[in-house]
Length: 261
Image (tube, rainbow, N blue to C red; front, top):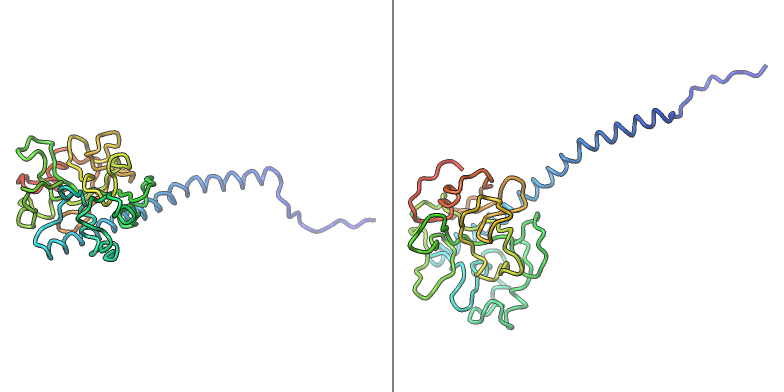
């Protein structure tokens, strides 16, 4: 008589295979959002590090020259970004730029249209030469002011402008934004790190008002946008901040009392 095999069956049935696939699919569905969240958290931290370096460079410039750089210089439109290049380990590039010529003059364009990682947010979708994802804050026109909203730190100057220094920041350096993310400013509207016209003055939009005007603080980070203050500290500004608080943070001398933000 033929002997019966004592070997155990070790193959999956179709039903068992389907169960395993379903479990793996469920696990992947649970893990993917966590992976995406972790990646975005890393990008947000890298963005805040870029702003922290820019904020420190602004402070070093102010310490050296007893004033902050102009947001944009009269005539040439050279930006604050250009003036702080030596403090961002780009001194060689700074030496190649002719500050007597316009920022986009033929003699400068090869230098000023370089894309520098320090001025780029890793979450950004912008892609053109010389881009920036950050703007200097020129102030706020949310409330009527006699200076036309030029009540921030970094704004376009004219020959009669007096430079902004630490003593000019009456609201306190920890309550006054110097630089913030600027989603809407792009290639068609002077979104270049070397161009002083990219300084924005807050108007009526909340944080991350992505459908609003150019003068809004906005990013692709879920829930808010990064900003660096005049004291060099970086904060993630929530979309839930009131317009009054955002406007107060964008001004240096309106003497508002700003609560926790």
